[in-house]
Image (cartoon, rainbow, N blue to C red; front, side, top):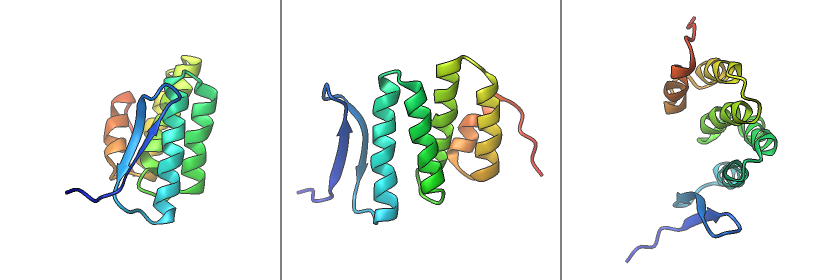
Length: 117
């Protein structure tokens, strides 16, 4: 028998866009919810809204577990909305600077050289 709570965030069509499992304190629970809403907007190609939502997560919850992911996706959203590849380079630098040990810094590193130091 499983008893771990699971929260699934789905779009209006019922497609799962984000999930998280287990108990989380409020300072981690709220950014997870907001990440799910941003992912719904991303899937709907509402890139201005998506970028704003992801950036708000980073601003409101900079020390949360999802902040590096939100910063990464904010850059992707800006790129998708504008077609400006410079957004990806800026994102790589920002993620490396704020969250250098995150998996998201590694993922963003392909978008351009990032000076360390």
